[in-house]
Image 1 (cartoon, helix red, strand yellow):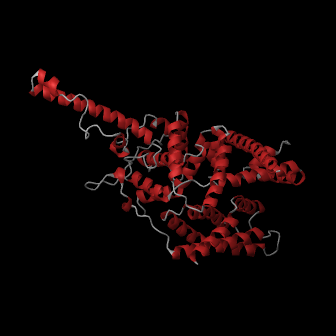
Image 2: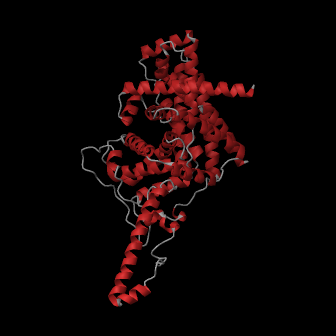
Image 3: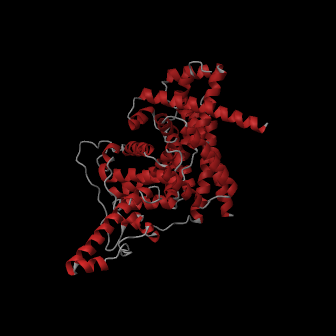
Amino acid sequence: MASQDDEFTMLFQDFYPSLCRFLECLLGGRAPLAQDLAQESFLQLHRTAWGTLPPGEARFWLYRVARNLAINEFRKTNTRYRLFDRVVEAMRPAARNPEQEYETRERKQLVLEMLQTLPEDQRAALLLREQEQLSYREIGEVLNISESKVKVDIFRARAALRERWSKKVKVAGASVS
Amino acid sequence: MNCGFTEKISSLIDGELWPAEAREVERHLLTCVRCAEARADFLSLRSQISSFEASLPGVVQKRALAKILAGGRGERKTSGAGVSWGWNWGYAAAALASIAFIGLIIGLMSFSQRPDQVAFNAPPSVPSPTVEPSPETKSSPEAEPPKADKNEKEDTPKPKATPARRPPVREPKPGEQFASIPEPAIPETIRSADAQTMTALHFEKAENLLRAFRNVRLDDTDAAAEVRYERKRAQQLIYQNMMLRREADAAGDVQIASLLDSLEPILLDIANLPDRPDEATVRVIRERVERKNIVALLQINSTALARALD
């Protein structure tokens, strides 16, 4: 039987990347901060709740903690963080060829910008659905809201993004022609 | 713009409608162009959001795990986002140390010398550099063990009533500093050519399976045999998928690991299908394959890996 640390390591390897992605989208980029908060969430799990949670609960617990940490970050004045993150981002070596890198970055930026236009609760619900494929019940559990609110939030988020997306496409089309 | 069904379309693509309701919405979709467009747009948004890749270098992940398992000393310092938090404490600690040091010097001098000599000998403003470090040394995240977060209780959902059991934490070796684990302690593994070949072959097999699964017609007489065949193929691929994912994770190959990660639940779903699955179940799997755009991703990655091996 695997030791607790082995189990924890497996959980970490399974969910750390997706938790980072969730936080990065929630925070509107700021990858280093997202990584720190993901690490902090796992650390709190390891320190306080690991071994006491029922099987399968750890994942929801992590997303709940991570989201709370992200909300705390929103409350802070964070110009300095942003500046630092940009410097770190600029210093990071490019892994692919410049063209691919540029395209990926542009696409990521667009997705992040669109997501930032949503209220935080809608954004969190949508990300948990689209990226983590959680059910409405599970999302409700993570965000501590009812299933019907999850349903409405996700729908509103989609409708708003759809509208903005089509506007962007129209603007892009007009500028091309 | 909306015709009353739009909200249900959102639930439909999430698989959150009862079967009867789902059938009703699907029937409606056949006749309502607006709703069909809404569904296409929602699925397109889904593909944009789900294909978002986190900027996560493999080494960051390894370092984070090592720190957590080591007891979390020096956490939130890996990537620098917590630096300004560290600076605040660093400045405070340095200021306190400086005051204490100056006080100590003055105290010692006043103890050992006459008051007039103290006034003459006391250095006006240049304390020892070892006590008042430069801003760079002050900002060293490892210099200060993190204080307990005031918001920790708010951030942390209440654990269950069972008493908190602290997981076993590795004891530090003599002289070891957890907060600054040196790079060689967690070596960057490079993916071997064998692993890459296996991954490329695996992607090809998975791609063939998903293409075949997409084309299974449930109303055919031999649909059950086809489903059985695809199920068997999926069962064969799951184990290898898990192994390759772990290997890619360990090597820090985020792109491959995340693709394998997306593939795994789909393989599991196919592997667990009954002999005669209902249409809704198959549709859900097909939709998932489609929205993740996984067939194309498998094709692109297997070609890229094969090219890299040439």
